[in-house]
Length: 109
Image 1: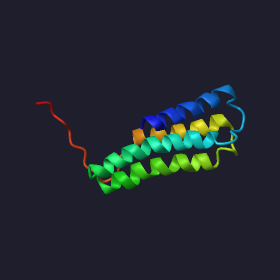
Image 2 (image 1 turned 135 degrees about the horizontal axis):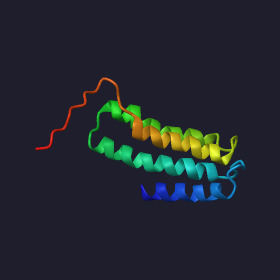
Image 3 (image 1 turned 30 degrees about the horizontal axis):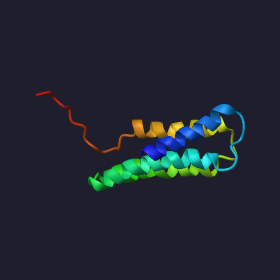
Image 4 (image 1 turned 90 degrees about the vertical axis):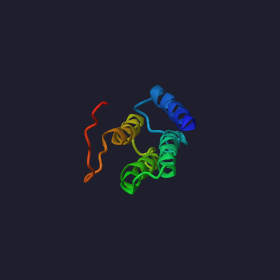
C-alpha cells in the first residue's frame, strides 16, 4: 500500500508542474499503476479474509482495473483529466454499495 501511495504522489508532483499538458513517458503509468497497486493490496486483504464475491467483483477488481485503463489512455488527455479520472475511481471506493445486501442498524451496547 505504501508503494502505491508513494508512486501516486510522485505522479501527482509531475502533474502539478504542468496540469494542462499531456502526460508523457511513464508518468500516466506511475499514477494509474500506483493507485492500482494500492487498491490491489486491499483486494488481496479482502480475498485473504474471504470477503463476499460481490465485494470482490463489484468493488475491488474494478478499482484495480480502472486505474490501469486510465493509465493506458493517459497520453491522450490532459494531465488534470487523468487526475480527475483517477479521483473518480477513488471516490467509487467510497460510495459503492452493493445492491441486494441488507444493512442492519448497529445499536451501541
